[in-house]
Image (cartoon, rainbow, N blue to C red; front, side):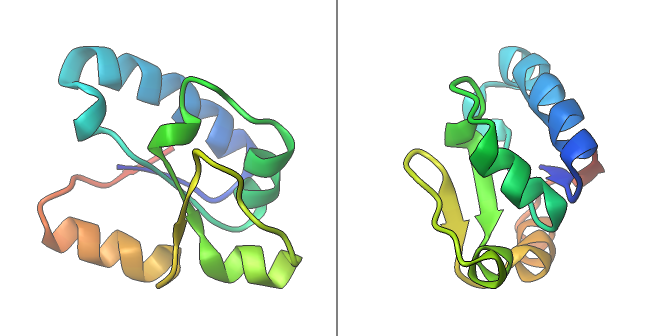
Length: 95
């Protein structure tokens, strides 16, 4: 999982997700966005990575925005999701 809390981290995560998906398969890659990266994700969709992207529901609520398909919303929020995913065996990479 690639964690992107900023707009610049989102750019790196999208680029790295593409490379990782080719090497590991799309099922092995997720981008978790929160903070400033949420607005950047919504404002600049990316057809290649949006289906892999998990958006912090808490940040969406704070911004008063909704995530369109194919983005996935984390109802528990990004921080809880990051912890849960690591407990499930996902590897954490800060983008």
